[in-house]
Amino acid sequence: MTGASELKPVVVTRAEERDGPLSSELKSLGLPVLVWAAIRVLPADTAQLDEALSRATSFDWIVFTSRYAVAAVTARLSSPPSGLRTAAVGRATAAVLKQHGWPVDLVPGESNAAGLVAAFATSGFGRGAHILYPASSRALPTLAAGLGQLGAEVTTVEAYRTASGAALDVDDCRSWIARDAVGAVTFASPSAVAELESALGQEDFARLLGRAPAVAIGPTTARALTERGYTPTLAESATLRGLARSSLHAVQAGPAPQRGRAPSQ
Image (cartoon, rainbow, N blue to C red; front, side):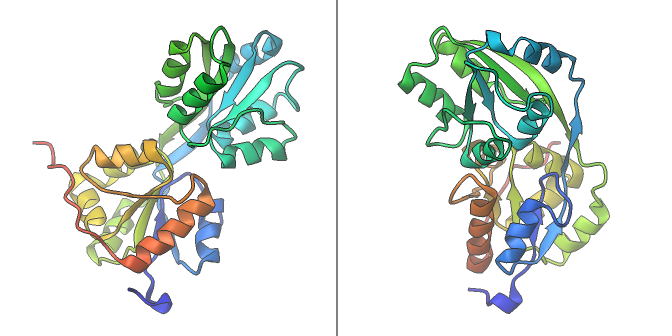
C-alpha cells in the first residue's frame, strides 16, 4: 500500500476547473489532482426547452439526471409550477435542486437511469404520466425508453450540449502516462470515457488504464469502461464525494492488471 506522502495524482476528466467540486473533494482527502477535462458542457439552443417550460403545467413530472440540466431549467423557472412533480437521478442532483428551492418528490435508491425507471414502476407513477426530460445532447436513450415502456409519454428536450474537451493538452497527458505518474483516473460520465480515449488514442488510453485504476461514478459510466475491456472501481456512492473517497482507496491499493480492447486496424 502506498504511503500518504507518495500518493500519485488523480485525474479528473469531467468538465471543471482546477478548483472545481471533484478536484476540491480529492484535495480534501490529501490527493494531488490533474485536471484533464475530456468534455466541455456548453449552452444549447434552448428553443425547445423554452417552449416546453412555457407549458410546464401540462406535464406531471420533470426528471433531472445532472446539475447542468438543473441549472438550465432553474435559470428559467425559479420554482416548479403547481402540480409538477420532480424526480432526480442521484442524491447529488437532488441536492442541487434543493439548493435552488425545488422540492424533490422521487430519488431512486440506485443512482442511474435504470434505477429511476424502476422507481417509477414500483410507485405506479409511470403509466399515463406526461414527463418532461431536459437532457444532454448526448443523453443515452435508457431513461426515455424505459419510462415509455411503462406507459409514460416522455418529452425529451436538449438543455445543454456535451462536447469534446478542446483545451485538453494531450502532449502533457502523454508525458504523465509515459512516466507512469498517474494514481487513478476518475470518470463521471460515459462521454468522458469516450472522449478521453478518442483524445489519447487507444494505445495511450490502454497504457494509462493499464497502470492507473479507473474509478466510475455509477454503473452506466462503469459499463462504458467494461465494454472497452477494463474493470473499473465503482464509487461507493454516486456522488462526487463518493467518487473521491473511492479514488483514494484505489490509489492506496495500487494498480490492477487491465487488458483493454485491441486497437482498431
